[in-house]
Length: 89
Image (tube, rainbow, N blue to C red; front, side):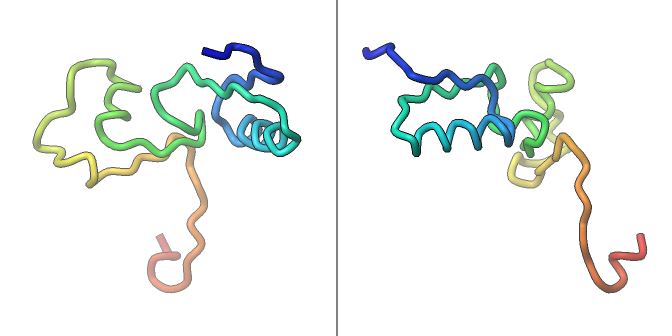
């Protein structure tokens, strides 16, 4: 295994991804790593199981919550731009 890199980027947040992409476009050999088991750091969107492990650190979420595909939980709030009844909430 070749373990020589020009750049090591720690984290998968927006700024780290931009830096990693720019370095690779500049023909640098980049190692891009993250300590989390998901991609996106604070801006990530997690499924039910990943979110449960992130906050509870226990086994699995209760079955009554449904399937992973039923959930997409953002770790940071986002603005929702809409027009109509939805925007009045």
